[in-house]
Every structure is written in C-alpha cells, then in structure tokens.
Length: 495
Image 1 (cartoon, rainbow, N blue to C red):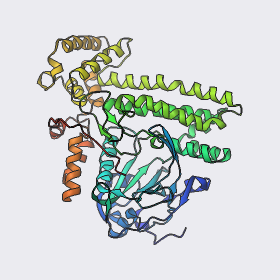
Image 2 (cartoon, rainbow, N blue to C red):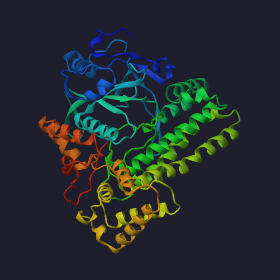
Image 3 (cartoon, one colour):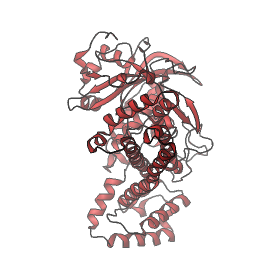
C-alpha cells in the first residue's frame, strides 16, 4: 500500500506484523475521509510514552491522521475479522467501524496497536454506518484512563476527533473517531473465527503469533505442548483481570467473547460503568435485560468465555479429540481457584490484611452481605474503613450492632498479624481508591463536552482519576454520591 504523505515529525514508527498473518484474518482497507475533523482531546502523556510528538499531533496534518484522512508512513490499515458469542449466541463479526493502522514501535522496543474507531464502513459492518458518536468515544476515553489510573490492564485512548459529520442514532449526534492503543486486538473471537472458517494451519499461525507477541516465555521454556500452555497462561491473566474489576466495582457490561482480549487487557468500553450501591445483581447496560453480565456474574462469564477459547484451540492441543478435551478441561479447571485466590488477596489488601487465615473469606463475605443489606456505597465504605471515619459517614450500616460486631472481629484479625497498624493503613490506602468515575460525574462531563463544547469538566475529572489512591481534599467532591432518583441508571452500547 502506498503511503500518503509521510509525517515523520509526529514520531510514528509503524510495523505491521498482524498484516503478515494469513489474510483470512483481515481485510486491507483505507479509512473513509471525513469533512472537517477537529481535535477534541489528546492524551499527551500517552503520546509521549509512545514516542510521539504531541505538538505535531495537534497540527492539521496530525489531526488528519486521527480522522483517517491521512495515512502515516509505514501504516497499513486493515479491518480485523473475528467472531463472537454475543449474549450467548454465536455470530460472524469483525471490525465493523474500526481500522488497525498498524503497530507503533517505541524506542524501548514495545509494540502497541493503533486503531481508529469510527473510521467508516468495512466489509464487516453488517448494515452499520461504520461511524461513532462523540459521547460514547469520550466515555471510552474517560473510563479507559480511569482504569489505567487504578492500575488495571486496559486499552487506552490516545485521541478523539470530531468529524464535522452528524450521525443518526435515536437522535442526531455529532460524529467522532477515537484512536485506541492496545497491546493487541487479538480476541477470543479471533480464535473462534479462524477455528470455524479457517484451516488448522491458519489456527496454528495465529496461535504462534499470539505466543510470540504476548507470551514469549512459552517459547523460552520449551514446553512440550505450547498451545496448552497458551490456554493456561490466558486463563491466569483473565482470572487476575476480572478479580481486579470486582475489587473496584467495575462492570464491563458486554462480556461477549469478541470483547475478551487474549493479552489480558480490558477492551471495548461500551455500556460499562462503576457500581455505587453494592449489589452483585447490578446491571447498567440497557440491552442486558436478563442480567447475564451483571457485576456478580462477571467471574462466571470469564470462565465461560475461556471455555470457548479452549474449544477453538482443541485441534492444536492433541491429535486425539478426546485427549484434547481432557487437556482443555484440566486447564480450565484452574480458573475458578485462581480467580478466587486473586480476589481474596485483593480483598485482604483492601482490609489491611497481609497474611492468610482460613476464616478470612467469612470475614470478607460478612462485610459484603452487610453492605448489600444496608445498600452501602461500595467505594466509600472501604474508604471509610481505610481512614477510620465510619462515624462521620452517611452510611446506615456503620451504626448497627452487626457492624460493631464485625468491626471487633476485623480489628482482632489485624492484631494477629505481625505487621504494624501503620503498615495495614498504608496497604489499605494503596488498595482502596478514593475516587472512581462515578456515573453522574461521567454524564456531567459528557453533557458539557457534547452539548456545550466545554471540555473543562472532563479535564478536571480526568485529573482527579489519574491518581485515585491519593485521598486529597481536591478529590472529596468527586466522592459524593449522586442525588436520589427512582430511575435506574442505564448505559448504552453507543453503536
């Protein structure tokens, strides 16, 4: 593909290793130009970490790249093919409104996918217009950066540009394109696609590429069954990732298999949100009417998705079908225990506990049961425990005999460990965020940006979310709960 006016001053340094895979996995495609792109927001710290020149990226030529109007030197745009179980039903999918420009190579030798989301129709659009609205793209920017601040593996957002072209959803909305940065965009659904419609040689090529890109230690250890080890390693990363989600009250909202990244990053922020009142049945997505992807179901769905990954890998696990299934089942059997260990370790840290005792799980579950019963705020409850401020909190739970009894057991538990009270306090501060992207704050920022062109509200929110464990006075207003309402909060996929 011929480059369209190189922009070396921006710092783009592309490789295209994914394009060297079997072409059944993608379709080369040029983004569809937009009429009058304008930069809405640029992630300058992320740009710097990628070796990019933020000043050049803000120039008309730089913005043209984010809009898909220019192809930087070395890029090879393509739409990726994949499949997915969407709410349990298998579908043939693909990048219906996104294009992978290529992989940015940093000076440190790191490789990051650069993807344009909302860049126009592709062969996988399935009657969609290939475009994206400004609000959902800004939501992904905010939530993905919040996840990064929380220390949770995630794709990130480099920029959002408006296109100057309105798009029609339920109402007419301003169009936008988001530039997403990811370790890769290889999904469980990518493996499902090639297993269903490709050859075993293509499945092996994808698996070998994934190992080389994300699990190089498998090659270095020279294991007998590298594909079984791939399944085992992906299982561990997903268990660790979903435990991190649960520990901060994050609800992905649409855990389809095409939204599970093999790298172990959180990907595809659609109807995502953070839980205020603790309730495992919490659902925000307007389309999840049965609660399949509710907060409390996320660990189970993670295991279900991994089973679909294992099914795709079966031809590589063993030449005998029955033996392949046995190996897959043995690998998958590790998921539940691994998730539970990651989650328990995180919950112990949230309560300042360094060592392990058998009754810790009962102590933790008792607290969560009380929080559900008294409709306690998830984040603020742990902050109050961290700061020893339960008496000053507006939380009905803290004044009950149940909590007094639990509190005595908790403090007795802390006394039984060698670490000091100060060490426990610091562990809790490091494990309990003071701020999360609360839904009413996110909506406030989106409304100001989309309807008024005022990005200052979003900028202030992002600044607070960049250091969520600080517990500073400046963060206090962002800890406040939303006003009471009889209407449940709902999020939308934004497609």
